[in-house]
Structures are given as C-alpha cells and as structure tokens.
Amino acid sequence: MQRPTAVEYPEYYHRYANIVPDGSLMNAFQTCHQNTQLALRGIKNEIADFAYAEGKWTIKQIIQHLIDSERVFAYRALRIGRGDSTPLAGFDENKYAEAIDVHNLSLDELLGEFHMIRLTTMQLFSRFTPQQCLQMGTANGGEISVRALAFIIVGHEIHHLNIIKERYLSEFQNEL
Image 1: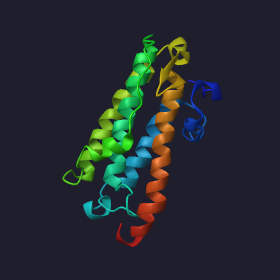
Image 2: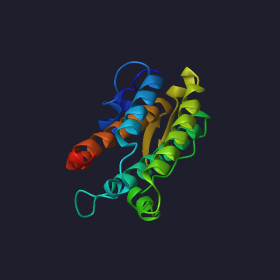
Image 3: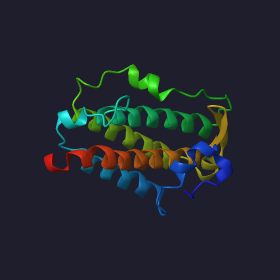
C-alpha cells in the first residue's frame, strides 16, 4: 500500500501520516506496535498511572486512547472500504478518556487488549483490494481514504510512543 497523497485526508492528520516509515505498511504496523509493547512491558503501575502535568493523560490513558482510536479508525476504513458512503461522525477523545477508569486495570492488561486490536486491524487492511484502499469517504466532516486511515493509525501510535518516551519514561529512567 503506497503512502496516501495530501488530498486523501484532512490536513490535521498530516503529522501522523508523514511519520510512518517508508516501506511495507504491514511491516510498519508490526514494527511500530512491537516498539510500543517493548517500551512499556513490565513498567510498574505507579509509573503507568503518572501524568507529567495537570490535566495530561497517564500512560494507561494513552494506551486506552490508542485502543479506542484504532477501533474508530478501523471502523471508518471498514465502512468506506465496503462502499458505505454515509458520512461518519467524529469522536471526542477526551470524553472517551473520561468515560473509562483505567486506574484499576494493569498496564499489561491494556497492552494485551491493544495487541489484539492491532492483529484485527492488520487483518482488516490486508484484505482490502488496491481499489478499496483508494476509496474515499467522509469522516468527522473531512474526506479521507482507506489507505490514509491505515497510515494515520500507525503514525498516531508512533506519535504517542514518542510522547511517552520523551515526557514519561525519561522522568523515571532510573526506576525502569
């Protein structure tokens, strides 16, 4: 699957789609996800419940956000890829984060769920034909292609893993 052009997604998603490495998208799905799993497996819950500033999400909340977002983006891809032209609503990630208490979940539970979601996402995208990957639909008021959604999913995870490494794990470097 080739990288989408800038007309295949709203400008807001540019930062995600463009940080996906060149090469096989399926490899990018796997490599990015393995990097997240390796970086976070075994981190103590005290660290996973840490927010670097008032009003910022914890590592657990970020992983839940990645799970929720991947589900939403994959659902959009499914609908658009199957030829459904119904405009799809947006979602408020902050309201989603407020609606679930991840404090009582372990980071390993969240990472396990995230891994299962990634496997199904990869299966979904592996079955789209080249023509389906180019199909355009409307989501959150903007035009978007199936392949753009794939790149956005991977880039979104890369973006958040970079934030976790820079703003969370660096704070606890001596405790890891």
